[in-house]
Image (cartoon, rainbow, N blue to C red; front, side, top):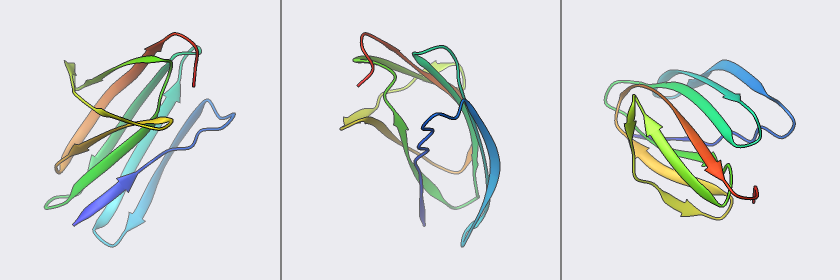
Amino acid sequence: RTLLIEPHPGALLYARGVALTEFGPVPVEWKKEGGNSMHFRFEIPESTGAVIRLPKQGQQNKLSINGQPKEFAADGRFIEFRVKSGTYSGAVTGSGVNP
């Protein structure tokens, strides 16, 4: 029971919605701030995990979730990490040129 959350913001600066999945509704919200920051919030249903892939915000990226730094893997234009069920909010910030 694993979901994939992978926003592709393009020119959008903000999005909020609820994806109806086979595991239940998944509220997702993200907001681009400046050229090197993306804030997010999402809820993963009970007994479900998720792979989160967020766009890199620069050459050097930092990820914080619920106020704590979090490790991630770099994968092409994205950073990737996994979470269990729960509510998460945080940000990806970058420095250097956007990829």
